[in-house]
Image 1 (cartoon, one colour):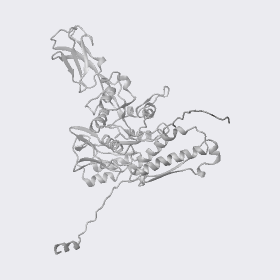
Image 2 (tube, one colour):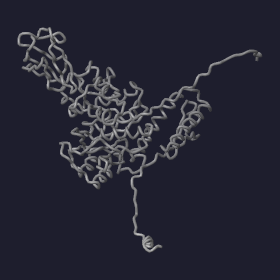
Image 3 (cartoon, one colour):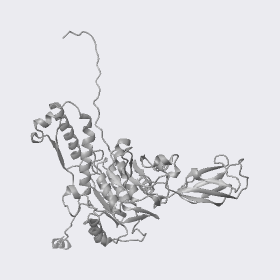
Image 4 (cartoon, one colour):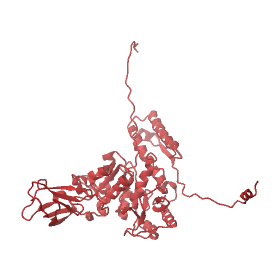
Length: 479
């Protein structure tokens, strides 16, 4: 080597950081008042990520008619009640799902008229006086008010005479009742590859780089076919990831019949949390799946996005429980436990308000192992698997040598040790075993690691044994 005499410098690049996701991302499927957005057609069967209610309103619109526009319930629960975000949404209501309303006399006061119908499409509005059809933007303007209703305002100097108090107004409005369970389920076009409905779970990571962690469809998931497809789609997302499904039970059932309905209709997956019945809060009606999902996201956020803590006994936004028809229901504590014992999460009222109640997945009581039946343990297994994929993807296609084998094992062990140190795992380790990695497999570029983890279970039962101790009577006569 030639001798160097002088000063020199060289540059060292930092290695790529492992990809991580520290938030829990729920994805909701349903309907939204897309007539309020700038491009309604662009809000149909697309994965839309919203950070807050204003963002949601801009991208999907907003209405307090949650029965018609189911995604608005989720938006209010996460963005307003719980101040969470981001959340992913898929709207399946199309701009072709409309109902025409013939032109009829409309009263204008101070040059304005509010159409008292949800879902009015701006471009469909006609304003006329019987002989002349007026021009939008020139003779009148259209704007949505805070309630999502369309307001017609006469333009000063336009063709509509000042002081006009009555005009003929016609329009078309969205018809959410056109949407059926099959629309929520969706599919993939064999020719174009375009996905709709639940198939769009595959697009979440591709569009946003976020792994969808929770799949929810309030207003639809009490349909057994929809629920079954949700569970099926939670497995092998993009061939890589795993999610957890939060489904509603049929809230028209009396609570004593819920357990048998759950079994008869196949709500029995270990990747499924079943929620029942519905709930009210300040006059609004929520599906329990929405409230349990919000509790999961809130609890995860307190733990750096790690889902090791159960949503049970966590606050939910409720001041009462309801059947589907709006009838109030008071579920006794022992009956709430009976629901829990059949893999159903419900709500109970405690001294400080309502709380989610129940730790078991749908797999209970058929299965009793912690890995399949405890909600946080099950979600931790999905979390670990997803994070391993994200963290070690950058090492794919590196030379398969001893350095790579040890680097992967060491990196995973360091990460697991961090989870143990934080209390998120009781223990965890990675092993690379010769029995799992024969020469022909290694020669073909395939490596297998074994991961051993123990997430903590919940303190589900705490018992105090209280006894009378006569020895304390001595205090009465003590000097």
